[in-house]
Image: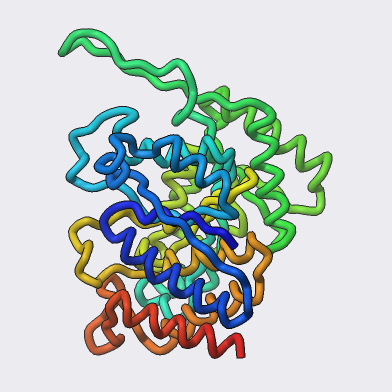
Length: 359
């Protein structure tokens, strides 16, 4: 495996380091060749290169087997605008790698039910997957503009999708529904938006032609947001566009009590992009407080994609072992109920348990 590591900003380098070390030890245990390159992304790339995602980094990414990416951004770069913002680098690398499907699994094990902002009986049994279209929609649609004089400005973005863009991400979602519980809920706003009417028509047609064995339902995005906090366990796979997926997947990510738990994979091109859902958390950067679980589970998704299921299963077992042992970083720790652990301490437990699981 040849992995490009882009640690990013804030807590990104800390959690990336632990993930890479875990991957290295697991690969060594099974004799799997493992190499990494490291470069800058986001704010650190702006500081190093004057660009949040320079072409040289893109070329390295295209030559790698996968990309492991930390969070980007922070107050240091808040005054930058447009293509110079750290987050714009994420849009660029997703587009350049043609990773059009973002997968965000959200499962709440019994050991974390008490940490959820929802009642335990509401969160029980939640195990869902959000499949978000990643390279189209309003984030990329043209025209886009802001113009006019102060006090009389006008700004607009364009939400645009083609049949091809909808079909390819829907096919990914239907395929995952087949692997999981056999249910797909497509989320749109077809009662208002013409683009959502096309979305619904294309998904319905694809279902009839190729995936009639999957149970398909449709839901408006406002209702979906409400249902996620009323009874999230009703969902198996959620399919939606870029904007709605951005919002819903972040909302779903809080169900376990912390964004520090949730991984993601961006797929569709020849090289996958794997990153935690959480942000760069600059307020705790460098203090050893960051929750590494999201990055570790993103690494497990990467191992799956690179056809190393035994290592992926062992890594997930290591994470579960840490949770079962009551180890919690500050974002999830409850005094008198769990054992507070730092980034390194929790990661070390995961490594040891994962290696034990390998036998």
